Length: 246
Image 1 (tube, rainbow, N blue to C red):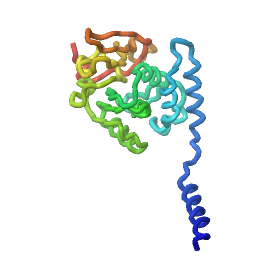
Image 2 (cartoon, one colour; image 1 turned 90 degrees about the vertical axis):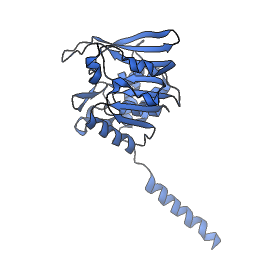
Image 3 (cartoon, rainbow, N blue to C red; image 1 turned 120 degrees about the horizontal axis):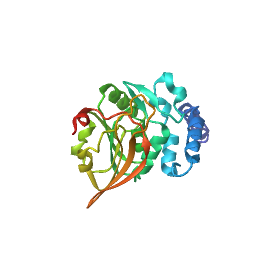
Image 4 (cartoon, one colour; image 1 turned 45 degrees about the vertical axis):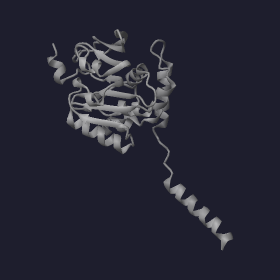
């Protein structure tokens, strides 16, 4: 019996392995093409961080957009996700993530969860993610999808991101995916010394194809904030307390 048991068990193992095998992902080629596009942009807009590019290869962006828009998921432009919001174009997600310069294990605050795609990219980099969404419907959908995809390192709450997440501070990095008129003071206060804040700032461009906002990278030092402008951008405006901030 001992001689027969090995082949029998091997056969069972092969059957189980076949049953548990994942089918080929039909979107893998589209993700690869998108990454190749981001790597081909001219300087200074080229995405060069290999870890960020690898994260974009792994995250199934098509699952973060409405089913009716999935054909557009890997095109390099924003896609509406409902409630007047959009999922940022892949280039902007990559550029903001690259500017954060995250290390594995760092704690990052995201203001504006939206679809949850940016949070998934941050989690793929090994960050401990705290994400805030002011719109309850979007927040609940994002939380359910992130949990389904196994992004257990993402903590999500519904609320006004202007105030940050004080009980989880200090953060190594903060990323804001909506544009206030000025940098919210609580977000700076909750950033540790040496931490980075990536944020679009400026007026709402409305329906016009204008880029009156600027994407800033701020680094907190003992002496204050070091500021660097990345590029002109157009984001949905930050709502909540930001609208009444003088």
